[in-house]
Length: 549
Image: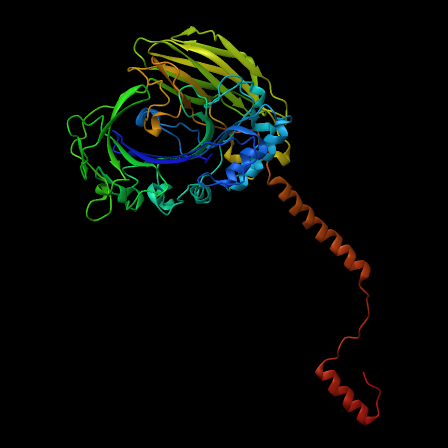
């Protein structure tokens, strides 16, 4: 039977109340295939990733590269969350015998594919979460021994990471929405995140046929003031320095969605106008979108170019506060002990819900687990589930997972004390006084929904509303990342060896040089040269036959 492929692309633009604008690209490739059998022909699916999945028996792979921090209280919830830096989590098939060795080899291969520093992922920053990262696709079992999770919070994202990401697309950056991905514009923004998600998905409701889904996402927030334009007006050309002329020829669907839910009083206008409207339930809220279908030639008009313009008429209106928000910071003074504070905000007025908190702390911050406290509204809040794996020096990090119930309209604070370890001098980074990064905490929760969620996986929906599976209509899954921490460690004076070397070399040069000079120099007695008057007198005495003076 012929192998079925499907490729979809879409761009969602959400105007923010701050005047900034949020753009989210999603490219989805679905392939009906079975990687357990040998695959020799690739059409739309990138061969480099297909070979990785087949060789390392990968069931699910999720990798993201993010520059900047998502400001939840200013921008709301993102369609796809990601922490600052690099994040990688993988579910392996249960046929893998040595998961750690396979994980190490996989990170090195992905490091080459995406031109990133994933080769720095090792046992000291890898954990096995027991409950936080469940499979997002079809799952026959959830044995967490086949799960690995790691972050590199200091990873810098730049053009060399974007270029191989674009090459994985069926049309590359030559046609379709990908022509807007211009690096000098994307990286001149407040937030930028690119990700690759691979998972098995169902083709129909009984789930008799499975397909492999590759979803490439890119999220970017353009700042109103950093753009230099000053006025609240955005267009595709101002954001990306490009306009659209065609859809990707290989795409079965190519659409642009403009979120107009917060535009009841015509606070902004769209140009060119479109009569296509679509409604979708996103993050527990029913949103309305204006839709531009790029597969229809009428969308591009007579000039055969599409440049969507968003112009604000009014700056009134308030943003709805997100129901779940989290933040984290380090307290204390000195370089011996400290305290990590994690704050989780439940902004729902009358509903409480449980959240799952995951903390991965490096081994050189030695946690005092007996000091762990969880308080809500000034009272102790006992977690219903705690999983803790202690660290081993230079072997593995701390892993702390707990299930906490957040009361309505409350702030829950989790604190734990730690002691800083003294590293070997070869273990410090090239700039040790800058500090050491600790990865973001991960908060996973089923948040109460204001509208009924759609649980029908076969119903056609926009890509941005179908990433996290929905099991029930009354709630939706959300994942929130806190800020990464920057912690100072006791740092020796690395300039002291230089001073010692300079002083020692000076003493040796002066002392040994003088002694060597005295021992090896040969001394000879030389007659002093007579003066001019004496030489004239000797010439006269010689002429007279008198002995010289």
